[in-house]
Image (cartoon, rainbow, N blue to C red):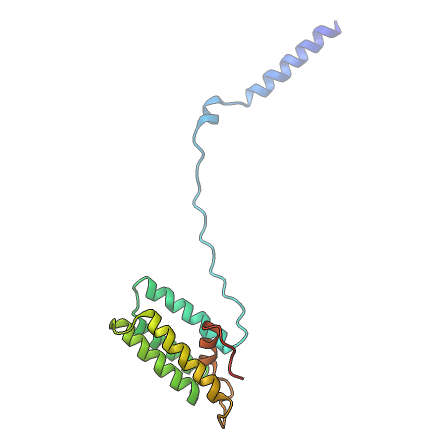
Length: 156
């Protein structure tokens, strides 16, 4: 009698397992849920030049999408510079050249490589002048932000 009971038990177990199986449900396409948009995480900003770099990258995205011109982005960055750092002779001169290049780029007077070379030379010139500048500004943040962009050592 035990073998018959074992067969009945196995059959009942198999049927119980099949009861939960729905062949139509298994072949139905999976519902794809949209993935939530990742939150923009702002990095911990260590210095004013890093803050300006973060803002410049944000404005560059606006220019790429066509919501701003280069000149508008330069003006917005200039307003941020004045609000966060204030004026100093070095940053004022470098920003003036930066804005002039943005205007020239918008007017197709200057190409990107031309602007890059001109800004690079201006920054190299400031590195030489910095050694002899008296009095030195305490935080030439705008110039140092551009030094970082152009892979040059900051003014110290």
